[in-house]
Each structure stands twice: as structure tokens, then as C-alpha cells.
Image (spheres, rainbow, N blue to C red):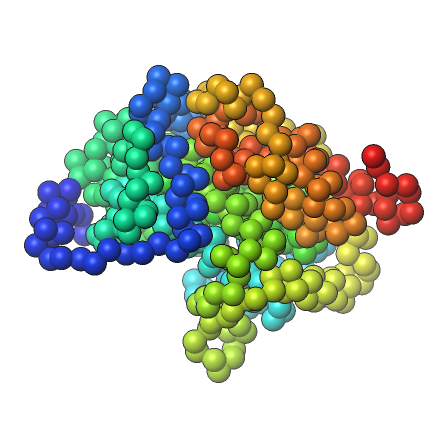
Amino acid sequence: MRHITALSLTALCLAVPVPASAQSTANLSALRGLVPVARLLASPEGKAALDANLKVTGDIQSGASSQPALLPLTERRQLALKDCFITDGNATQLADGLGTRIGDAYQSKARYADYKTFTSVSPAVAKLIGYTNNVTKSDSGAGKYFFANATSHGKKPVSEEAAAILGNGAVTDAFGRAYGRLAGTPGSDAYGNPRPFQTLPVLTAYRGEDYFGKPSHSLDWLRGPGQDLTDSPSYPSGHTTYGYTESMILAILVPSRYRQMVVRAAEYGNSRIVVGAHYAMDVIGGRATSLHALAHLLANDPTYVGQIRTNPAVIDPASADTAKTVTLTDYPAVVKAARAEIDAFVTETCGADVATCAAQDQSRFKDEATNAAFYASTLTYGLPVVHPAQAAKPLDIAAVAPEAGHLLTAAFPEVTVAEANRILTETQGPGGGFLDDGSEFGAYSRINLYEAAGKVAALAESRRNGAAPSR
């Protein structure tokens, strides 16, 4: 990718009038939720959080961190190298979270033959993955250049409504300003918010194999040719948004593996830090972006459903339909259809019901204590409190983000949304983080789906077995 300096970019924008680029209502909601990162330099607490962000990121990337992990450091690095590739057409690389039996069966059916050619498990699953990933990716992508230089895709001015979000002390290029790598300066990003491989004092590079088993190097996925991120703003993490989006789809479709898929999502986001592509804040932002949008989809929010979306995954790749577009007007109905297809697929390939096959697991996700410790470590990455008022009180999820409960009830319909929100409130993680400013969006940076899912699954099981409802 050709390097464009800040000066030449400004000159280009002045020379050629460019119409403002409108952001969707969903995009604007995500931008309002993600904007606290742009205000961190305005307070001592925010500056301390930015300093910690670089330190925590560097420690994880170098292997110096004491963060709980599912794999030894050498294996984490090899996994991170493979996780650089995104199987957004079928979520197959994430399906190892489904366990030994189901995961192997899924990956044998849903495969990538090369970087563009893939197969799907079933039509409804393909449609669900394609539409959902497109929606959450749009929200994440809207933030990239917006927080880097207040544009859409680097050059187009954003709408007036979007520009107004950058008020109350918000600045662009927060990472470039904090880490001495302003946009367009040597070694930085041309647009702003340079990535860790451009700002860390020391970057650990290593060799291994890529997703397809070919010889690769970590720098191949930072500076090219695998993926050139030198002029790609860091915040929020698009990979993490994808990882959470499609892991959550598989979690909802296979409730017996819900908690393990949540851990796989966190692991995929963590891989971005391990390879040097993202900061801890990027990963937290990507997670919140994904869960926020997915909850609204599951609630059938008209802002998120009923749109025409284009994605190679929305239909069978062998179909003659080259438009590859889809409109979902009833999201829960598509989830229900996809689950029926997954149930049939698992029964056919494993020779038993889903719960039985899910229990036959010898993967790295088999230990609950290890899963819980790792997932909890990724909720805040140990970053300091930025919003003390929020740290002093638990959030009432039902009041702040009432749609959040759908993330659980979609998998466990025996439980009501009100009950799910109560459990999300009881199990939420530490408060006051850089996104936890009391907003609906900020709540998604705080919920602990691993702990909540354990309680919800137990309640659902008691209902299925005819036990009296809990009070």
C-alpha cells in the first residue's frame, strides 16, 4: 500500500471536494459508544489508562505477561499466526470451540479451500453468518478512520451527525498522540491511531505456519504480504469484532458449547495482541461492538434487521446468484432455522444428539477453571479505572441495556429476557473501564458472558427437568 503523508492527504482533500459520507443509524450508535477512547487524553485517569494500554499490550505480545492462558506461549503464538486469517464466510477456524467431536465435523464440512473459496454447513447457517457478520463489520469499520482522522475510509468527510460525536474533549489519533507517533510521521500510520507493531519499544517476531499450513512469519501479517496494516488504523479491532460475532453465532446454535465458544471469541481477540496487530483497548472495543450489534439483532431491532446486505457467505457459493445479497426481517426465525440445521448436521455426523457429542471433548477448552480465568482476564486486561463513579456501582443491565439478555435467551429459551438480564447484572465484571461511562454500549464492555451463561444454562436445565422456577 502506498504511504500517504498527513500533508499530502490534506492537500488532496483540499484540492478535490469530496461529499460527506453518511453513517447508518447503527454505525452512529457504535461510534457514540466507542468515543470515550477519544477523550482519554483529557484526564489524568485517561492518560494512565493509555499508558497501561501500551504496557499491557507489550507484555502480552512479548510473553512477559502473567495472563492466564489455554496454551503455552509457543502454541499461543502459532495460533495467533493462524488467527490472522479471517474465515468470515463460515466461521470454520472458530469451530474448534465446539469441541473435539462437533468441531471436527463442522470443520470437515465448512472449509476454506483457498483464501476466497469456501463451503458452508447449511443454507440457513450461511445466511445467518453472512448477514450478521456484515452488520457488525459495518459498525466496526465505521470506527476505524473516524477515530483516526474523522473521516470515512480515510478521505471522505463523515456526516455532520457523526462529526458532532467528536465533542466534549474528544480528539482523533489518540494512540498516535499518546505514544509519540502522530499520523503521517515516520513509522506511523498515514491516517492516525497507529498499531502496536508501530509503537511498541520492542516487538517480538516469530515464524510458523499460516491458516493453510504454509510457512509464514508474524511480520507478513503486519507489514505484508499476508496483510499490510501499516496504514490501517487500530481502533477498534475488526478481527475481534468478527471473532466475537461468529463465535457467538456458534454458541447460540450449539448451547451445550456456549461457554467454550465465548472463550474461543476471547482467545481470537487475544491473538491480535499476541501477534502485535492490536492493543488491549482495540480488543475490548471490538468485543463491545460485536455484542452490542448482535443483541440488537436478536431483539429484532428494526435499525439492524430488514436491510439489504451483501456478503459472499449469505448464499451457497455454488449458486448461480452472483449478487449474494440477503435481507433478514425476522432475525430470531433465521436463528431457529439455522439451529435446526445444525442439530440435524450434528446428529448425522456424530451419531448422537448435540449434548452427547458436545460432552465428548478433549480440546484445550475442557477445563472450566482455566476457561473462566482466561476469559475474566480479557474483560478489562487489568487496565485502570477511568470512570470512578461507574466503578463504585454495579450496572442494572435491564435498565441500561435491556436487549442484552437476548444474547443468552437465544441459546436458552427456557429463561426469560428479564431473568437473563438479572443474571448479567449479578455476574458483571469490574466497572469503570475506559468504555464503561454509563452508556448502553458501555455495558457490553462489562458483561461477563462466561459466568452468566453458566448460571443461565443451569436454570434452563432445571426448567427442562421440571424443577420449580427460581425466585
